[in-house]
Length: 335
Ligand SMILES: [Zn+2]
Image 1 (tube, protein in one colour):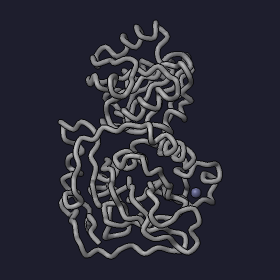
Image 2 (cartoon, helix red, strand yellow; image 1 turned 90 degrees about the vertical axis):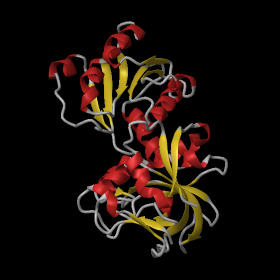
Image 3 (tube, helix red, strand yellow; image 1 turned 60 degrees about the horizontal axis):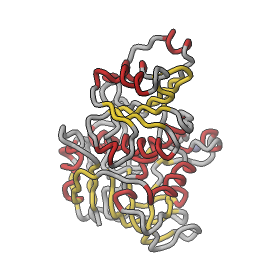
Image 4 (cartoon, protein in one colour; image 1 turned 30 degrees about the horizontal axis):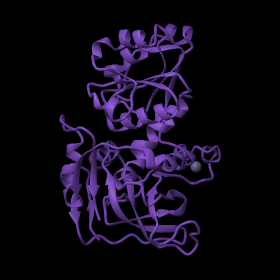
């Protein structure tokens, strides 16, 4: 089969070969013919510099959708021909985290495409417990965006206990996870304030307010909320927006993150934290139950695609992730 594969880390070492061995499946696995894969920063760092990558040679690709080609003898819920997405947290199902329903925090787990081979290939195998059937009318672009881009902000907003009528401020709202967060914020009944320069986040994705002047975020949130400030602030941009975003959190508010793109070290005013009873929340992936929830909603979700690449250009696709002009998702159309 064809696969983007590397023997040594480094973007230049990622080669597309057409004689890679097709994965075998156990009795509890399915073989999926990959239709499309999302391209994410996790794939970039897998190829370039996560230490201890196994197996080697390695196929990256953490966000996959496709059609089942073959099922193992003991697979009961899936069959050949099913359109599926892969829940990309690898988990054992037996540790205390798994037993509490936090499969993505499994003590013996990791991420598909990082600790296993991924989906930048014609075929991928995955355990039945990681594979979810989706309706035939879900668009492939949305299907290829569920396992990372969609589930991550959904879980974050649930961890932050976002409630009806609350004010939600989203930094980086026109980014890939940001546009999903805007849609979920609306579905959860919140009043969504998008920090973004793009007006389409309002017209196409339903944000209630836009703040486009990054220097005036705090005072504009104050105006919009009539002094109350935000109940939940979602900010995965990292340290460059940390201070402003923390200043937007109101009394009893929650600040939540799943990324630190611009840097991870921040300074915190502990007095503001406890006087206002603010919760700082880290969020990672999603549970399988939440993944099932977003699949249920996937017919109503929209994704903004910027560029598509063929598998042969996987390398170029990864490089495009950090292009200044990027405006939406990057997808690999594989079959
Ligand atoms: Zn576990």
